[in-house]
Length: 252
Image (tube, rainbow, N blue to C red):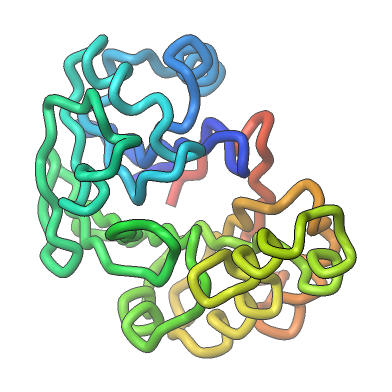
């Protein structure tokens, strides 16, 4: 199994997960034109995508979903809450997700799990092809016991390190936005990401991608410093996902 990102950040998100027979896209926060261009960079085309999974209805995750789905006849998998949001208008080929019940698309099995975030019914995912497991955890305001349990024992993890608390408080955001981002239903900060890694079973973890970093309230160096005591940098392959290029293919 392998995975790559078309881009990660507040201006758009999309991630590809595939094996030899199946390719799914998690979120589609870019225009169709932009998605096609970014897919080409990864050696893929729109026709290669078998399904879109939507984590929640915020525009940086759902903006391109309806049009991409209609244009290329790709089914969309999302919770009832996400599909009921105005931002999901135009999504026609939809499959409902229960965020506590796993399902399969082709040869990839997906286990969704609920997360605290300021959306109608947000969820994140663990993927497996029967051998290895990949977890995705972004857009979450606080760590729950269920999240810790669900991610335990995975082989690779895309993990939100959205902001440095000090930078957020001293930064340019209005007060209300600072409260939202730093709140229990906002985004994970560097220290929270480190605490998650301290709390979960990382015995099999060998790939870690730091994702959804704020370009105004974080620096990659700060995120890496925060995680320094939680993981062994010599034992785990660490990547920083960026807004412009995401990251290239990682083979688990």
